[in-house]
Amino acid sequence: MQRTPVKALLSATQPSDDVLVQGWVRTRRDSKAFSFIEINDGSCLKGVQVIADATLPDYPEVSRAATGASIEVRGQLVASKGQGQQWEVVARTLKVLGEADATYPLQKKGHSLEFLREIAHLRPRSNLFGAVFRVRSRLAFAIHEFFQSRGFLYVHTPIITGSDCEGAGELFRVSTLDPKAPPLTPEGKVDYAQDFFARPTFLTVSGQLEAEAFATALANVYTFGPTFRAENSNTSRHAAEFWMIEPEMAFCDLWGNMDLAESFVKHLVRDAREHCAADLEFFGNFVDKGLSARLDFVLDRPFQRCSYTEAIEILNRSGRTWEHPVQWGDNLQSEHERFLAEEHFRGPVTVHDYPRTLKPFYMRVNDDGRTVRAMDLLVPGIGEIIGGSQREERLPILEEAMRAHHLSPADYGWYLDLRRYGTVPHAGFGLGFERLLMFVTGVGNIRDVIPFARTPGNAAY
RNA sequence: UGCCCGGUAGCUCAGUGGCAGAGCAGGUGACUGUUAAUCACUUGGUCGUAGGUUCGAUCCCUACCCGGGCAGCCA
Image (spheres, rainbow, N blue to C red):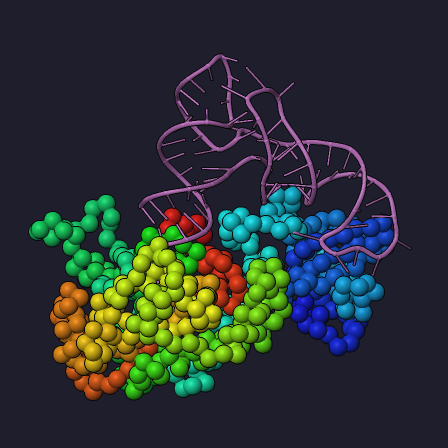
């Protein structure tokens, strides 16, 4: 007999004489004549209540069904006589599959997120993390749905890359050389010509450059995969391994890019609302009281747009005293981004056309010669969630920009070929999947929206 | 990496220069419909580690380790 997921039991439209429930005990309440056992199987936030009568032949099993134990129950699905639920299962047979003794770390009481991080292998059994990872799964699906329904092709850009200087952050080296005795060149340096790939290789920090190659052939493409940054960042918004979505569109400028980013974020918020309503309600009650209103607000209004130059004026007119005073040419600090998204625009805002000195070499230079067609989408509570740009499609200007960033065009032959042969205006962006999840769930720490977080000094699992 | 806060029972925390505390969890018992059930009783400690000050340190000092917050870097 096939098990019925708890989600299906709870949404039943009629009683059933014979159902099989399999799952993990969340809590058990005993009285003299019977026990109530709440079983959760991850299919939804709520568990199903099982009634085990003390006269059952299997009743001695109940004493082994402690919080955390895995059990299976066969019985009748009936309308509940109690108040808290519509349906419940009256057990006919009950079997403990795997006991959980007193050392089981998850209790019925709430735990701190810090403690749960230390038991990353067990935390998906908690309400919060079950909900987080259901939403994560659903939104991963919604990402593909969004792009596929618009004719974008999914490109698997490489995880291991030989491009070592994209300027997107520190890289993790990939090597099979003996770290104690690597082969050396005559100059005494490590000889990577003898390494597995016969050259230095790294984990990717972005699939953008490779996505551009495919966009200049297949027009509209996207990547969705893991990326790696070896930065020693210790904040609630950074991880060393995270997932990024990077669309890249040929025949598209910065404005088309912004339009896509806005539709994309709205699609994902709407999808979560529609398909993860119970989980979002849980976040609204226990994680972030203002979540529901904020998500509504995001769906209801167009995202605001403002140039970097206007942003600097807004910051300097604000009357605020900044810890880091800003003038044109400076990077926007966290306090500035927060002010723009949380206080001035009070919602998502896209800041665009940054000074070229602040941005990577590949962004398209504007006619003013001092700004580039860059955009950052800032959201309340998190800050930057998307970074993107129109790419420089003009070969001589791209080569000049590379030299200005102290990069050698010779190292980027294949990338420059994309401009040498049939170049087109094109644009794209990167969205941090975990940051989006933080925004949609209200969870405040990136470590709590990744199954097994990798941060500096932490890769225990 | 810098600054700040913290580390006491399985968990969440209180506490004091002089015998180590509570709630929850666990155990035992009670209870005929519970909802993180309730009630009674009860087990449980290298007070992060190493030095130092002191008659005496969980408490004060120093270093280190671990966790968290913020900042930088970015997504």
